[in-house]
Image (cartoon, rainbow, N blue to C red; front, side, top):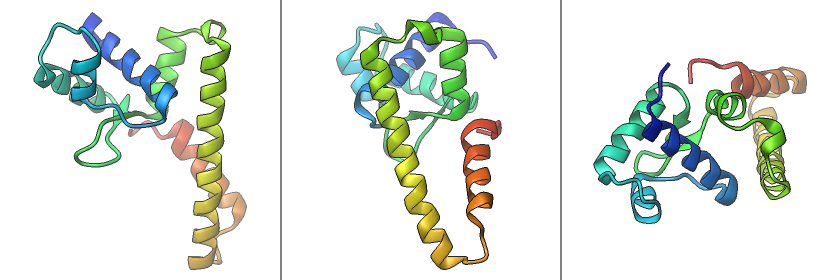
Length: 137
């Protein structure tokens, strides 16, 4: 997988904006708020490429994109070393992780009502596999 400088810059901005806001990041936002010196169509193409690589995903058809587990791994391992996160970034990342855990617990509660035969352990393994090991995304 190869990212040119602009694609890497766009990916980094998307991840950092997602850490700040916990909201999907779209091409219009990037074009309006960052001097990328390209059109929003070019930004959309780069976002689509990052999606093809499995680094980003669109939670909604008309919305922006968010990092996938593969994208997080790439960001941390290739772009930003863990020791280079500021306290503010770590706090935001911790908040996002807590929201994710809270949401997964809510989902687990709903699934246990619909499928009582699904154990908590199975669900936990399923979520962990999806978040950290599912390389199809």
